[in-house]
Length: 116
Length: 116
DNA sequence: TATATTGTTTGTATTTTTGCGAACTACAAA
DNA sequence: TTTGTAGTTCGCAAAAATACAAACAATATA
Figure (tube, protein in one colour):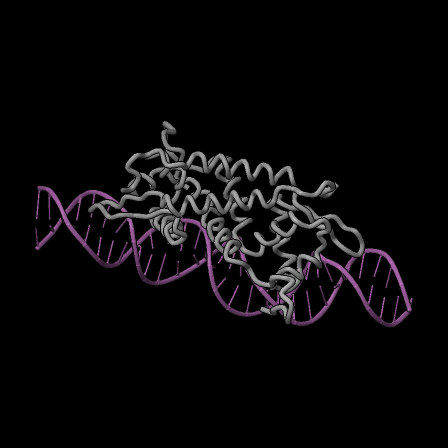
């Protein structure tokens, strides 16, 4: 992990925004997890079983994907014995969307002759 | 890969949009690749060497990350001997942004009592 | 107490990702 | 022809991701 000796004209490390954005993007980097987010958004009730029914994977795998979304902060689960209700973490999901949108604005092509 | 027997009331497979979105998200799921996209957007000249200088990783690793972005369709490289010029693939990047934005709109909370 | 329901966790296997140094390619210049 | 420049590819290693079945936990019910 070589670092810039003096000057800092190049970052030579990732900033907070880049790390956060990459974290969120990574969490969304699997079709099952995209499907979960979409499903949670449109359901009133969102129990584990319902999510599992929606996906073509074993329940253990569903549980893993949900954990990853949870670890990334995008969803949260509450126990309602004997079920577990999942839903989107609105605060963090809002933050993620803002990060993505800022990123998209940053990456609008400012060059006239982009790559011909 | 169990499939729904009859009825199709559940999808039990991922649709095109979900696959594409996940593919793009995965490509953006590393801070180095976020940094590359940002860098490419703001530079007039974007040669491999410049990108390498900007990142805290070995050139072989940079090359790999660029390949992943290229495979995902987000960037493209053209040889200008002895250099290689990289830039954002505007068409695909546009498409990616649209997919993300549609996704964000889909996942706006429509529930009054989301998760209390 | 035994059983059923609903998920999570564990164990295991396979594949993918990340990272690096060293070797290689392709050309230009000395 | 040798050397230099600019990147890519190869070979390797370690870690993370993906997936499943089986075992487990926590409660409710028979």
